[in-house]
Length: 191
View 1 (cartoon, rainbow, N blue to C red):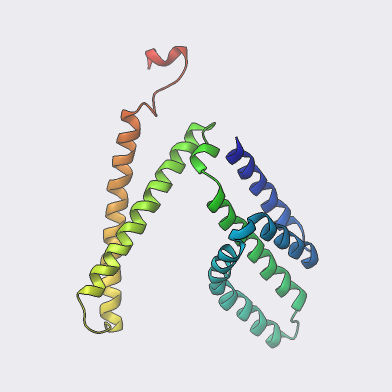
View 2: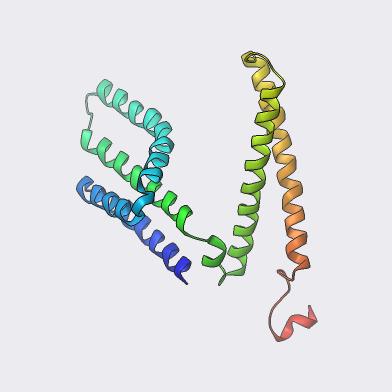
């Protein structure tokens, strides 16, 4: 029940963060989220800032350049959007750290099935990605030229997609063998 309540609280916080447009209220929400994280706050904040780096580098810098060229740069908008992205990213990191998704979604079989597939794929992809990276590093003495690096990356992506398809099929068969897809109720025997 705790996980379900945290998931509902997260959904409410996301709706609130996207509905509020005052940077002071968004900053207050971020402070509350940091306090809610407790001693995990520094680690989660560092992860949040690293994830935001790509967003800030592309969107914020692009907005500043376009605003300066057009002569209508709005710094309040820039501050608001970056605080909002930081708050939403931090809330998501906090959710991932604190919520067991399978428990939170156990009331809804379809969502529970989807969460099982996603989580198992994430674990498989993380392990496979590390193995591919280590294998590539162990087979070369120098950095690959750009063209060869792209070719190697393309081969790895094809391998990851093939593995994802096979793994999803295996997981679906395992879940079916455990009765996950069995119809429930008195009419179950007719199907």
